[in-house]
Structure formats: C-alpha cells, structure tokens
Length: 156
Image (cartoon, rainbow, N blue to C red; front, side):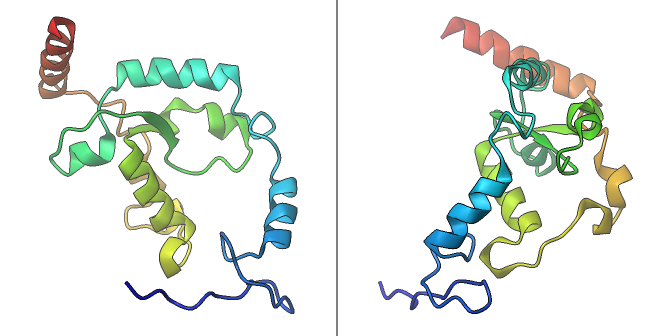
C-alpha cells in the first residue's frame, strides 16, 4: 500500500521529519520534558484507587451505551479536561467510564488528531452542562444489565 510522504516538523524553521504530534524527535523530547511526569499531572496511587472504584460502580462504557452498544469500560475519563486543576481533576461529576476504543476516539475528536481542529467541551452543542453528571444517572435498565453481566461473570 502506498504511503504518504513524510511531513516536516511543525515548529517554525525546523526542517526535520515529524515523528509524533507533528514534531521532530528533538522538539518532541523538549515538549515531553515540559509536560511533567504522570504523578506531577495528578495521576498517582490515589487516582488509581479512585478510578478502580469508579469503574466498579460504572462498569459500562458511557459512549457505547449512548450508541446502544454494550462494551466494558476500562478507564475513567475526564469529560472536561482538568488541565492540572486538582478541583476539576477530583470532581466525580466530570468523570465518565470509557472503553479503550472510545477513549482513543475522544482524544482524536477533541485533541485534534488526524488533521481535525482542537475542540473544547464548552464549544460543543449543549456545552459542558449537557455532558457533566450523565454518568451518575442509573436507571433500572442499567442496574438489571449490570446484575445480568455480574451473574454471568461469576459462573465463568
């Protein structure tokens, strides 16, 4: 299958070939150093424990559920990016359970992957209020489905 020619680094004046995020290897290392470690970005043992508890309470992918599909959630996502704000980071109404596929899809849609422009939750139709708090709503249908899944899992 034919491949596209390599693109150049997106930094002005740089003539190196882009690797990831549109940056050459040198600029990518510089960007990664400014990013901070996972712990510095608030993802530590407390987050791992809180995320695991959240996924136990909300085992189904929220996006797949809205699309009428049933897929097990594997990660806790921040609906509105926290951007280092600890209050927004720990706000459970800003969390949603996602499967890996939906998390990658969300990243592409909102972080500008594959040539798409970056978007913000506040600029989407319905705004932030339409997204936050959706996960906390459980209906009898959700509870019955969860019981059915958990009883099947215990048999296996």
